[in-house]
Length: 309
Image 1: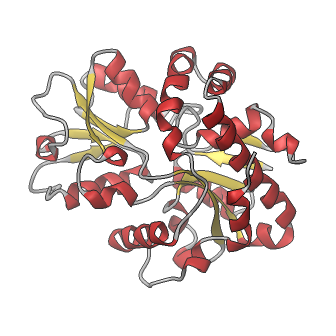
Image 2 (image 1 turned 90 degrees about the horizontal axis):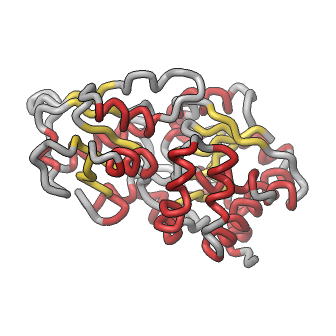
Image 3 (image 1 turned 90 degrees about the vertical axis):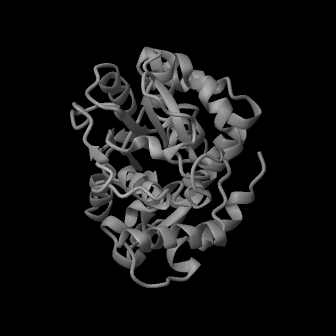
């Protein structure tokens, strides 16, 4: 089973990678490999074309290539809540939570997550054009094997950006170097309340694979659920995953970040969360109809979310 992720060095999709490195896919009887394929819409296009079997990404991203949720479904949550943080240069006069501070700034983001950043700013009363807020690419982020968060921290340090929207590994890198500070962490209550549930990290696959190989998909779901349990019980295991798959700097901080994220490692996808997700998608123009829960989520796997270790 080939599982694509738009950013490999991240806490956002970490359970999908940890399930491979800690042997949980193998224990469920499937051979699965997690590989980098960025940005997120490109990974979803690869899913549509059958080049990969599943994608770990923001739950709204399937709509970029599967209109109205036709052809793809969410099978399990990797982590709850909008997973990205907004980081500004440390030398800028800005207080945490004050989104008015972004006026006139250049903010780095990649396709997929940038949708959530734009909506966040709109909900905070920021008008991108009128307030001269530029959402721009991060230099080098399109290179093969690149980690967006790490490169964003480097660009911040070089004053190529005034801020960036990235996962906690990227923000921690910038903060740890003293070049950045967190302006908004929406999962932890900063910014507009609605922003907490724009999207979430999920494992997505096609309706065709669910129909043709339901046992394989079920095994992947069980593996994700089991690794979430395992990390909550013993987060030190995250360090082993980091040593195997992350650059040294990121590997050194991954255990701390995963420990911090443990409350979000819940596999369930609730109806209110899907309603919020679809509302966000309609705001973005990715969805123009109201769709039922069953069209978004592969409900045949819901009982697996409750599996105990």
